[in-house]
Length: 536
Image (cartoon, rainbow, N blue to C red; front, side, top):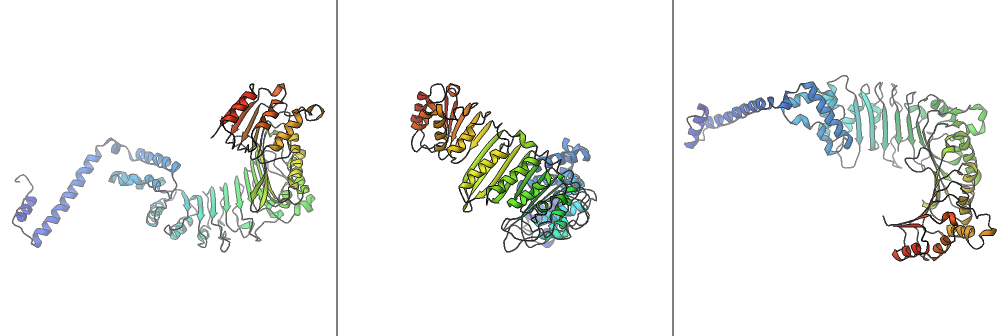
């Protein structure tokens, strides 16, 4: 005890006497405070000799930024894991100082609580150069970030990115972003669609200008007028999505629409959902609208009425596009589809390169049926076309299929996937594809397909013009087909195939009423074919 400091010895003596005086209590608390302060100093000395703390502040800042970059790749600002980006400031006093001085570490505000968000914005405000990345997702039962978002959006002079997903309506926070935005490169706004209350883009949104803006995406918001959009020459990706059931006057005129797009020479992706001009001016007066060529355009997605999509292609050329998706409304008559395909054929040079086809008909879609025609539907395909529309008369499918065959170059198709049931007449057309090597038939029934094969290779095949069907076919796959009537018809038909088809690869994937016995029966009946059964 004699080795202890004198103040500590006095406190222990008073404790042994059972003292409770105010002087004793004051001395006790003062001594505890002194010892804790002394301990912190000693711990700081210990931390100072740790190799990580002997790094220069500039090097440690780079470590913090690299660590934050890895966290950003796997977590969003509203994920609890994203706190790891600034958790380094809690390790020790030296690290905290370095983290605070590293302004780039505070450029992506976290939305894990209004207090933390405001604090990060305060730290960021101390730097005049660090650009802000604002990524926010609104959810029910989350704290209100109205003040923090308003503060962040008002700093247009330093914002680099604005992404709001699942945003709440009725708060008008976008009106705060009205100034000049010299660093802004991306704006993505996705608000809740509410039939009674819609969030509108304010008329003064980014009115100060955003000369570097490359990506503009707006979903679930009212766009009161085309002129409120911050469009410019740097735009490379433009996506505007409005609900199909919403009737409003925000669609641009053909003149305003085309004049704006002409000022976007770098446009690579254009996606418009119910936002095409609906005045039909280009179709009525084509001479008044010179051909507009989108030379840099790679991806085009249009969802609208047939007339409006037709009007777009009437005066547009997309020579370099590799992915085209068209989704129209109801097909009233096949002349509408033929007109669209004819204009698409003239506008799009790349459609000559299509080599894979998927067709679907008969899917239920809000009480109607849908026809989908996908050319090169795989993600890794260099060129793809998808056309979908609604119909309520079965005859529309026959006319639509004929229109596609007439206007698109499907003769070089090497891979074909057919969903739902098509007639024998359709299969006869497929059978004339000279380069078709892979054929996938997806359920529920294959009666039309078997009828076409029976005509081609059955007993009456010698008098049929279809006897040379599927000349290059190598692989035949059945997926999700219901063999409720057994496989006898399939065995009989495949057994009649000519010599060139004797070595086909047969594959059955997730088929119902098709078991091991059916598999063995096929393997015995067709010994030269490679039969495979997959259940995944």
